[in-house]
Length: 488
Image 1: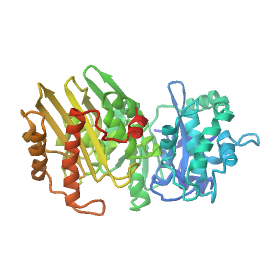
Image 2: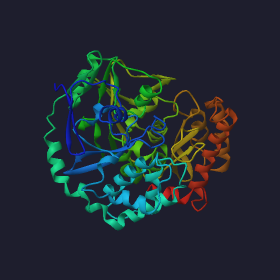
Image 3: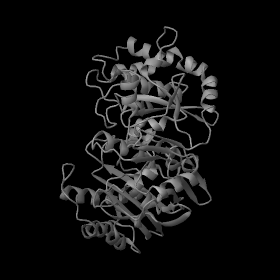
Image 4: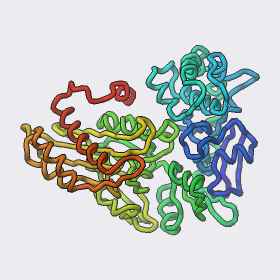
């Protein structure tokens, strides 16, 4: 084991041997490095004022991603390059994104400006040519500003490409940075701490399984989008944190034969392209469930393992017929995903057992998949109701139906009575009306500040009707065209 975290802060190496396992990148920057350009706004990954960029080697190049420093743990930086707003100007010249923000008057009070700059910087690394309006809007959706109205910031996003940001100092120095990061990759498990608590970060899946089996009370984390909130909001301080983000075997996603294999550590960003190709509605729900910063680190396996009743990926995967694969030490087992969720806060996961991967069947001809998320705010909001429907229709009849909902019960769940009301019947208005009525047998939603019981049930019923309309009258105007186009 290696007893230190090693990473680059811009181009300067950092080695941390003694570390609070739950110290966030934001606190490290401000309190240890005294780099105060990165701001604390919400401290929960919503406002984007803390946005920084993390670069990792990937397929022979650097992969730059914007992340929320307020909920990222410092230990997750091992083997990476961390870039903040202080690092963009080189040789006395502003970065093209910074210059464009100045020229377009993209800043007023300035508090949120560093986060916007870092989000746009990451965009220029990801898109060599100026992107369209939908991508710019999506890039900026995770950054909140009360002053500018966003129009000058959007203009700055376009103008930055007049200065050719792809030819900046970061592009010129990429080879040297890759070489420096390669020197940090030793394949060793990281084990650091503060003398009482520990942060463990293995590289191999076998080591991860062995560590978790030996430390079943440890907090297992990948993207920290939930665990970060436990730290910043609930003030939890787990004794042992095990980070799975260095395990390459968990980050693979591929279509093989008749299935899609999704490693538990695959981020939403890395899953979107393949899932959108085969299940377009999955891609659009994923686009809406969080900002670019959240999607860059949040994982599908983590969303499942947390077992939240309002997690967005489980209903999608349940409707599609996903199988979950679990591992404890060397022992492996598989089960239908819907059987994993036992009750509120309870999953069929034994102590020391981790989610290893998810198998998703590719849709077959004659099968229709639709998914709809309803929330108070269109983008980046917690779901009130999510409905996902997979229907096989042959000769006008429903030969099989999988209807899954999130937000209606203590767990994401299939609607058994509604499915039975459709099975073997013609796909018709009358059959859908019967299934809509049967939903009242399947769910007794609660009333909370997001929605009332009555509203949730009515929405759940109407989403099924919407599925019927879209599959029988594709020309019917049922969605925001721009939102769908942005995801494809």
